[in-house]
Image (cartoon, rainbow over all chains, first blue to last red; front, top):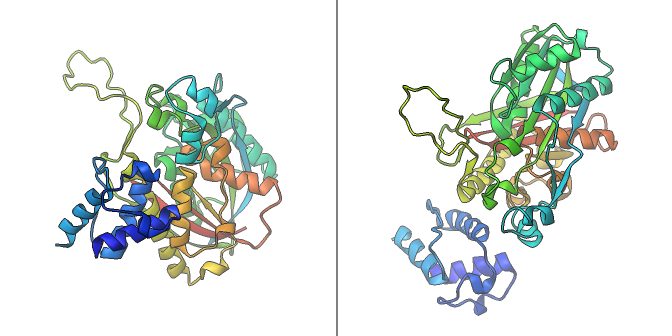
Length: 73
Length: 318
């Protein structure tokens, strides 16, 4: 559920099909930079109603999903 | 009591530094800077002091306002890069233009113009000033670590000012916020050479946590604009022009939809000047004024955010 929502957010951000985004997709391969991740993190705060900071060590979609799932509980 | 802007003026150094020029100084590229911050070039002083730039802007604003220096009741300068700790920049501008009114500086970094405006409005409201000059002047290039590619490509030098006059109408309302802290943006002063002081000098150049700044900026714009629209009872459609602080084009692009105000009303000139701290908004205002793009009676919204942390917004009629 968290993955599907985040995949859709990323797809909206970079204008691609959400089906192209897998858990092991690297941000680098999507040409997503750290400011894009900050923007996605702010969208995540609105969507999941949580306080959320993007960690620069996050490399893949799975890293981001895991961090959000930890917050959502 | 209320105010209107009688005239505007600005000054930027002649020296244009392009992204390709920056790529010769630090490891960066036109593509990286353009994509990350939306800047193509900035002005960097070779010989102009902060006072030189502020004085030129002040004189141009006075001329545009058809106002003589001796008519002024107040000069407020906003700067974080004054040439001297004392005398302050406003006193030196007062000296050079030949005014005799009170003059002092305030420090609110990139929100400086809005804080100066708020200060001047207080004097106008109390009947202590009928005409006031606000000047924002920044030589940001002296605050930068020119080996730090994450910050040195972002900023530029320049100055701008406005002349205000007390009127019966024209001002709607303003909001000002501060959230004190040095973990997001910090520009340490030099510690001096006291033989007794044993605290280690912090790196005396501009530090900025890019992601935290981005988040604060976006939240400030969307929050302050919504708060101000609610306070004034105006709708997003009532606003004719929005001039945001020009810190990063992506901040503007991301915050604009959250504000509810249509994109074509937002003025952006960061591609030519970079972030000139508190001078960014009045430089943009002066550009629009001189290009004839501000119709009398149009409602203008200014929104700023920056070090402090500080933020603010104001709505007034041109």
